[in-house]
Image (cartoon, rainbow, N blue to C red):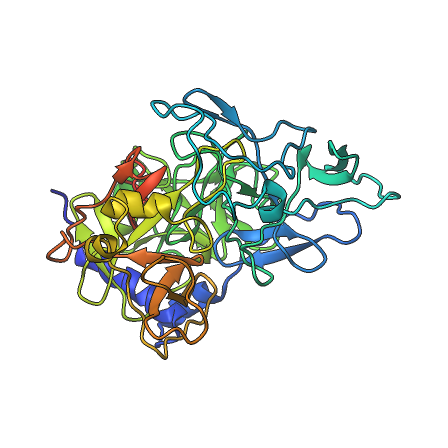
Amino acid sequence: MRRFPNATLTLALAVFAVASGLGAHPAHAQRAAERETYEPVPMPPGFQVTNTELEGPVFADAQGHTLYAWPRGGQRNGDAGEQKGRPTCDDTRYTVTSGLMSPYPAGLELPELDTRPTCVQIWPPVLAAADAKPVGKWTIVDRKDGAKQWAYDEYALYTSVLDEVPGDTRGGRKVSGRGGAGGDGGTPRVVVAPPSDVPAQFGVFSVRSGRLLALSTGFSVYAYDKDTPSKSGCTGACLRDWIPVLAGETAVSKGDWTVLEREPGVKQWVFRKKPLYTRLADDTVRSLEGADEPGWHNVYTQAWPAPPKEFTVHDSYAGQVLADARGHAVYIYNCIDDALDQQSCDHPGAPQAYRLAVCGGGDAARCLTTFPYVLAPKDAKSNNRTWTAVDIDPKTGRHAAPGQADALHVWAYRGRPVFTYAGDKKPGQVGADGWGEFHGTRNGFKAFWLRDDFKGNAG
């Protein structure tokens, strides 16, 4: 079992405290206030770029609603999602499963058909006016009903009814690489965004500690406490373990980016006054392990929003996990159904039949015992949109009615309640990680991993 240095846990808690306004080291306070920049691109009238807590800059409509696409992705028995230039999200009301997820057959009746919404009721298409003109990567595609719809990079654009205020990204997440995000977890919608304003050899990736700066290959970059903006303190034996990220001869300073000259003719990239390095020992992408070394830190374009102040962080057999005030691991529930429109069923506005089946055999009382909600104080407040407190009807799992006497006031991440597991008896236990179908990715529970360098557990 791998244990983590206490310094790593201390740093994680310190960053959370900063973002919660509980007091800060000046450097941490600066990190909490930083926001990711983006490369300006041409946009048609009526669109904008807005900064979000989890995904950095994203495209939005005139009201600030985040824009999403549904790139086609492969599943076990075929593909779901949309091809470029061919929107398929419409007013069809699906009633049965598609059969895309072996071993489940097609033709199984979906739950709550009397109230099941259509795709366009959940994902309103971003329609284009009759006189709209394409601009750059912004194009216009034809819908089957004859309407015109905006597209970006040829993928049709939608908003999400889950997004309540500008900057919300509750409908989906960014994905790395090209194409869809299909797989055992279904084919989700993805946030559409402008390119990050980083040199070509770098990329930015969403992990649970923030928007992580890395090489375009995904390998993390690090900063060193002994450096200054104009001089590297990593020399001699230090260079056996840490590799300066070199800039080309023609590299120039721009915005957050500068260069220093390590030696005549050899330039090193500097981001926000921090010279950048990779770690020789990193053998996985988006690693956070280098930050366990004294004086070294991962680099972020912006920090992850703070969880509630009573939450804690603990070491487990597979990484660091978010926990409640008792130290019991926190779990997220994942669910996408197997209809052709791939509706998410992981939030209180969706049918609860899937969750009740996987956590209690259909018995709501048993679910409450096995996977209790993480309760929030009645006066709970959050200074971010990522973490909020919501009222849940314990009998149904839906949002409670206003003033409902037996409602549970619970913590929610991205609008989705979080849970603990009755089988976890002490800090660090994660006995329900992967509970459910397809290791908890399709209909089930995953621990709220904070470390993302343990074979894909987190992020």
